[in-house]
Image 1 (spheres, rainbow, N blue to C red):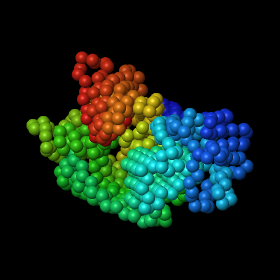
Image 2 (image 1 turned 135 degrees about the vertical axis):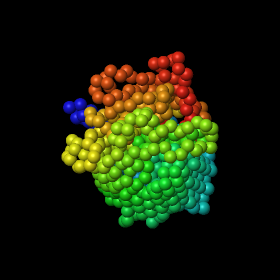
Image 3 (image 1 turned 45 degrees about the vertical axis):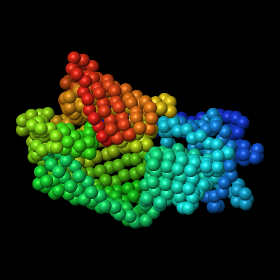
Length: 577
């Protein structure tokens, strides 16, 4: 009963992230007029010569996609003060365009040769919490401004901003300022360069192969390859179980999607004395509503703690300071999945996994620093309880269903956007069917992130996570709380259970591009079974975070249930919050 209730509540919570409001109004200003009346919208903009360019919007002219049939040309329009991209709005000289208004626009634009260009803006539900201000001076020859398409040729260098109101921006050359297409897409071709931010709040930022963006691509960048492409990777990691691991890999991508993407990685763990490999394949059909499928064949050490502390952070901590924050188990198997992309950034995916698991032990005690200090044992939280450790061993047969949404500006350092994911895992003789194997359980996991911009230099970041099972779980499926990545003022993995809830909130102050400070608070609890979980009280902490160059973060956190204990200080190198 509790399992089904948790699942239903999780689905309702996830779907609530997809609901949006709509509205319309009349807006007037010196340089721009918008009149929305029923199914007709007229946008009038004064150009530099005092002439008025009008855009007629009518629902009777609906087109499925944009058709641009003419070469681009410059037709300057007037922006007196600033262009602001903030929350769900575009603001030009104080005039607001809401996302609901813009999503329904159909533009008709006649060029100087009499050719008509008609298009409907594609529906994109981007939550634009980052506030971006671009100062535009029409008398400044360094800026490139157009009502229509803009093309920066390969031999061109633009030292100012490039802004298009209603067209696409195609960049082959170099732009040292910001690049913005308000209602279209920005396409960065091979060899192109952007010295500032690249933004397409109601379209897409597409980069091809060797394009370079020094600032932030917003919304999240879609990196494409116009033809077949392959890259070689070399990866290293270090921990107390595997020791030094060296991995080489090759990934093959066909930007035309005529062939599947292939990713092959292989390496050797010197202390574990075992080979690792992971061979993956993925094929996608379509674009906005794409169907996809794929799978992996793999073997090697694995951890369930990546969401708390990334592999790169753990390698630095282990190699230099003899502090390993991950617990490991060995797995060998195969998985497959099929999925469907939905509206906006939503997707639904069904997968199946068949693998064998076995418990691992500590295999090295070497580090650059740390002296006589010893690495802790693998899964030291349960001590020498062999029955709990051996619960990891055995064959796993599992089906999983995932529903998600992700339009964050970045996975590691999101300053805008939202994320939500609900996952149901059913193993062995679970709720779905009897898949066989040595493990039987059902787990529901939910996670959500949201960002709220307060001013240009202040924003909130909020994470909520939870998990639920009413069965006895193998050790590698337990939920752990405490320490880095969860309750930051407590000992690492101080609390455990087969159900948990956790909330993290950070209030950020961007003092400069290189330095950010945050005030944060955490709250959560975990427990085994309903009675223990209900009896446990919520654990809370508060703290201060210092972030340098979006690379190094130092957190100082104080638990509130025992203020006589000193604060916990933790350094991070791969940001999550």
